[in-house]
Length: 156
Image (tube, rainbow, N blue to C red; front, side, top):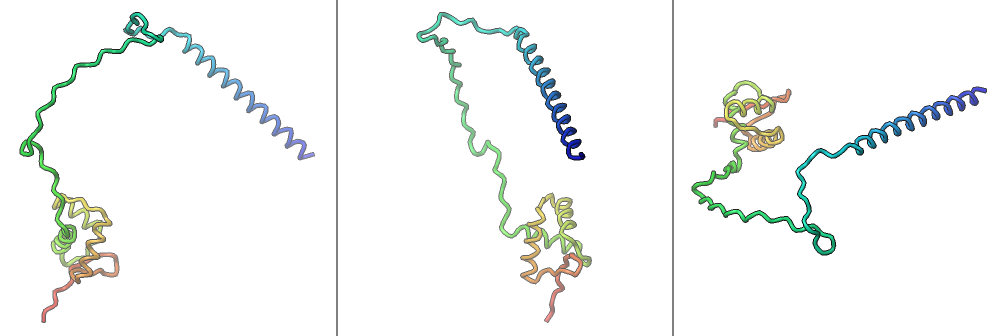
C-alpha cells in the first residue's frame, strides 16, 4: 500500500515537473519569436553595388598603409627591469633578522618588514628558502616556536 502511494506521488511530481518545463519552454519560445519579429535598429548599411560574378559582394577598400614609426634608439626607450643579483633574497632576509636582532622573527614578519622597509615583495617560499640557505651557513637558527634568530657569533 505504501509503495503504491509513493509511486503515485512520484508520478504526480514528474507530471508537474514536465508541465512546468513545457510552460517555461513555451514562454521562452514566445519571447524569442517576439524579439525576432521586431525590426532591426536602423543602421547605416552599405547598399550593395552591382553583384559581382558568383553573387559575391564587391571587395571593401583597404585602408591606406600607415607610415612606419621611427624606431626608438636604446637610449630613448625605458631601461629593462634589472634582475636581482644571485643570493639577494638571503641577504635581504639576513638584514631584517639583524635589524630585529634579539627577538625571534617569523617568516610573515620578515615579509612585512621587507615590504615596509625595502619595498621588496618576496613570496613565503622564497623567504623559507633563504632561511634554509642561511641556516646551512650557520648564520641563523630556528627557535622551537617557528621564529628565526641570528646565530650568536662564536669567538675563539
